[in-house]
Amino acid sequence: SDAAKRQEAIERQLDLFKASGLRILLPYANTTSGAAEYPSDVIPRRVYGQWDPLAFLIAGAHKRGLEVCPVIVALDCGNSAPKGILLQHTDWALRDKTGKPLGSISPANSEARAYVVQVVKEIITRYKPDGILLDYLRFPNEPVQLDPAGQQQFDAQDKTVPAGPALQAFKEQALTQLAKEISLEARRAQPGLKIALYSWGPHVTHNHPVAQDWKTWARLGYIDRVEISGYCYRDNYKERYLEVFEKRLRDAIALAAGSGVTVAFVLGVDTSHGRIKSASEIETYLQIAARAGVKGVTIFSWENVPPFLKEVSAGHYFDNFERALAQR
Image 1 (spheres, rainbow, N blue to C red):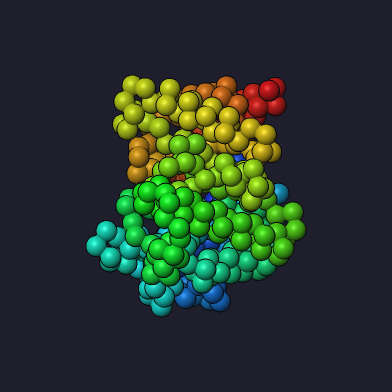
Image 2: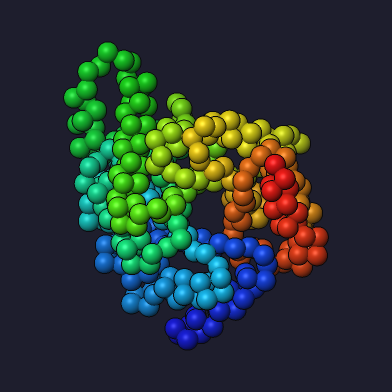
């Protein structure tokens, strides 16, 4: 549709969002296929050309008293095959077991890290957001080879440690270095900026293929909030799914203890892992999360929420959740 109809659609959704009781919008600023959702001067491909839906959304949200924290896809750039910036810099891409380039930017490559930081800085300086959420700040959940420059750095290391543990440590250090660079440059561009991270959970912080040591990032002050995946359904965890959900949250809270980082969870209404089938399920997740001790909830994603809004609002699910948090 044309820009006017797009803007009308955004205005309608903002009104619905405001009425829902939710307070912060988290629009994706870029995509997992390496494209920008705004007229970027850094990311080579733009979804909407010169039209800027992000600016329009932020202005409309602030007018309604809502906050906006853009979501930034850090490293995914095509998934199984290079897209976006990786078409220009295939040497920045991670490799699969056969050496074929993947659509994933390597955090072990200093030039690639500088590009990711540049994207983050552009979004911050252009939009002055209320905060940002970093997504895909992780390695793929599969065996991968490093980019050529990263592999060269790894090969130059002292190999007193077996190759497997050494590579794992190298991956964790590379990702931690990128988290550090993002944190330093983002807060230099906007002092006091709040940085959130989406994570699968506490289990990814040590000896996991994604190498996302967010416990260290929390301790060092690189992040302010961690959003733990709440994608636990009967479909993927059978009858124990709620036990798995609560344990994941409690373990994450224990891992973040003493760091000052807020632990929240992501309620997946409809995801690749499963979906919520009734509004009463939303209430159950919220009650368990409050009991576990989290400090907030993020909904993924808004487009799947409206069918449940009437019952959620009538039952005061979000209000009850907020009161439960305030009483802790």
